[in-house]
Image (cartoon, rainbow, N blue to C red; front, side, top):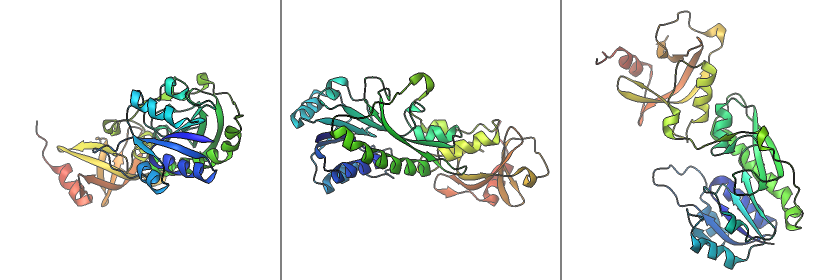
Length: 307
């Protein structure tokens, strides 16, 4: 079987390796360009293609006629998309007679759309997974070939969940390929009415609303913890990023309840009071590249406010 693969990030890297191990001929790899504003904490598919000696094309515009021409010349039996960052038009998908399939980082039909691992953590889910499905014009809407669940533990960050989903994606693709190569993939239902769709997230979405319950604030911190931009709050004209925290059990919460919500120093420790009266123990607090300890935070809290 010959494939054209649109791929990016860790899932793209691992799934390309699964195709090689399963004996699929990859006639062309299409990957996204790296963004200068983004920290590259993940695998570069361009490097994977070079290592595996696969033909590579870098394109962020799947509607480019030149790209369609390259895919057509490759004469793929099947097209795969593994975390490629753009919707591929049907005019390109239809070039593969055995179909086109996408690996999505959730248990479809839940969490269709962008940043599924981050959204799952933000909403306090206890599991998510990877789903291989048919690609259509509508995102994440085609029939399901296979999917595999992974647990989300109470203290997992989105990065930890993403790493689990990457392994699940590798397993799903491995066991799905024989049926796809035979032209007989399973066609499991993907009822969109039972699911949900979420858009991409921006760094500004990490702003903390201390009036929310402590569980929601904690989930936000986990959902955007490094290598993502981080949950943040403003104090004394500075933006403070909370990279790690833990909920404080009710029996161990401070005896006093200050009027102000947000960051406090209690007994030499940095804590945060949320809208439901719950507290978080703040483990990592920073401003830019500077770590904020309890003494530094005390100085900020005591700084006169400009009115």
